[in-house]
Length: 188
Ligand SMILES: NC(=O)c1ccc[n+]([C@@H]2O[C@H](COP(=O)([O-])OP(=O)(O)OC[C@H]3O[C@@H](n4cnc5c(N)ncnc54)[C@H](O)[C@@H]3O)[C@@H](O)[C@H]2O)c1
Image (cartoon, rainbow, N blue to C red):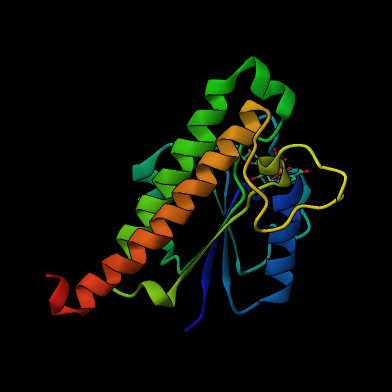
């Protein structure tokens, strides 16, 4: 089956490179860039691929669950790369709630919509959540973080990213048991 990949935050610094890579590397995939174009988003980053037949843009805020669901249905989204975020540490100290809304609630909105649209066959889909090393706090003398490094966020930005990481983990655990419940009458 051809993949229909939703990339959130695709007009941003990193997201625009991811969108360009996917549009050029996977001409058989539909690539949907979803971004509400905050101060950090700029579609000029993507002028070179804007006319590609496999590229689509949706100006949607991830806080709008209804609009997100419409995008999933309209494009038949099969997979998600979630990069949309408030990402500037200094701004998070001035306006922490903006980070809670987009990074935490926006991520949970996206998880809810993905779960609802994919619930008949969770294993056929992938949801990649982009985190940050800042969830681990300050780099120690060893000079690296690993997957077992404890979470220790030091700013509202990293605290909101850490929170979204935990929601993604919880949905992974819950989604798997949810699909087992569907498959197995033992759990009904
Ligand atoms: N830049 C870094 O050094 C770095 C390092 C580690 C992790 N990250 C993570 O990588 C991801 C991308 O980072 P970036 O530097 O490209 O960020 P960025 O700030 O450049 O881009 C974020 C994009 O998300 C969009 N966006 C913001 N709020 C939105 C909302 N509510 N709905 C829809 N779109 C919204 C913006 O318009 C923008 O295009 C983020 O999740 C960030 O936490 C970034």
